Image 1 (tube, rainbow, N blue to C red):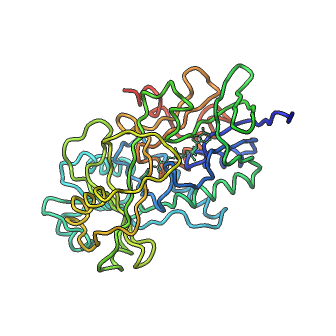
Image 2 (cartoon, rainbow, N blue to C red; image 1 turned 180 degrees about the horizontal axis):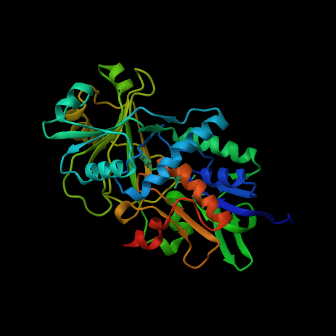
Image 3 (cartoon, protein in one colour; image 1 turned 180 degrees about the vertical axis):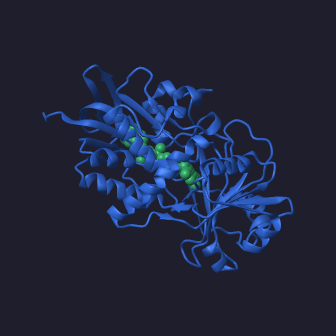
Amino acid sequence: MSALRTADVIVVGLGAMGSATCFQLAARGVSVIGVDRHEPPHAYGSTHGDTRITRLAIGEGTEYVPLVRRSHDLWREIEEQAGVQLLTRSGGLVLAHAASPFLEQTRASARRYGIAHENLSSAELVERFPMFLVDEQTEAYYEPEAGYVRPEAAVRAQLELARHHGAQLRLGEHVEEWSASADGVIVRTDRETYAAQQLVLCAGAWIPQLFPEGSDIFAIHRQLLYWFPIREGYRQFRDMPTFIWDFGGEKHGFVHLLGFYGFPAVDGPRGGVKVATESYEHTTTPDGRQHPATRREIDDMYRRYVAPHVPWLAGEPLRTSSCLYTSTRGSRFVIDRHPEHDEVLIVSPCSGHGFKHSTAIGEAVAQWVTGGASDIDLSAFGLAQARR
Ligand SMILES: Cc1cc2nc3c(=O)[nH]c(=O)nc-3n(C[C@H](O)[C@H](O)[C@H](O)COP(=O)(O)OP(=O)(O)OC[C@H]3O[C@@H](n4cnc5c(N)ncnc54)[C@H](O)[C@@H]3O)c2cc1C
């Protein structure tokens, strides 16, 4: 019989949050076992599809700004250590009518934190960003430091760095159950049993399976990413900022964007432009498979969002990909201790906007685990707030 494998901390799930946490813990000299049922980066959870928007003035609430600011520093540190480019400051736009609460909150965050930005009128938008067809009521917030981050490369880089610092990474291994007591935690997988002092659950869309007490908090929704081909104006698409286009309208439940968003053409003239909207019609469960867009979904995306607003893109996508949101009411993050076990942390920051904060979340969780508190205040992200 093999000896029980032990560490100071076990991290379950090595996607955006788990890879950042493992790296930050291992870099502090903490002994870590990281376990993932797949081989991250992979395309079955929430951290794939080439690009993620990052922006400093957070329209979801000012409490997120310190996390994204710290993440921008950390992307650069990780780039230097790993020798890869992760963050591109392409600039970022939020387009909306003046009444949009998201636009207003974005501007309020920028004012409060002194984030460089410009407010553009409809005429200025047409002149500077002619790839967008806007009406006279549409205006924009432009942030030069915004841009996009590379999710797969970021996960790969942080796992490599974690390994370099001594983390034991167990990939393709499924955590079936865990328990906690005054002596620490025990984690049983389909292959081995591990023991540690603390456990960090970063299981993304699988979190309800490992934390069933929270299954009333989290809802899993399939989202779709589309790469539409460029018919004309490749250079403008290559050089354009990321954008979030808020159409306004009544929002309820999980919805925080009625509109669509997109990225510059990062894969050359034939790679298309990636765009997406948000969908909350049906909940789902992760099954380790891709569920690309159906014919109806493609036609709907092009007709409702792309054709009227970015008509220089053609209607037949080069590819589509499904990706999972783990959402809470109000789209809030959950980063908190387990209600019954102090030595277990639940780290579930998604609701479609977690990636840009992930490196700072990894650092803050590592600080919590090692010192009981983090430099950045995470008290806004408790289980109680997500339940409200
Ligand atoms: C379509 C889409 C677009 C998005 N756009 C943006 C954006 O533009 N900007 C932004 O900031 N954020 C964005 N997000 C959100 C962001 O990508 C997520 O917040 C983030 O990727 C979540 O990371 P995670 O670590 O929680 O989950 P994941 O990266 O999915 O990691 C969870 C991991 O846990 C593993 N796991 C689960 N259960 C077990 C188990 N029992 N045993 C072992 N391993 C297990 C899984 O295999 C997986 O690797 C988007 C998300 C989606 C889906």
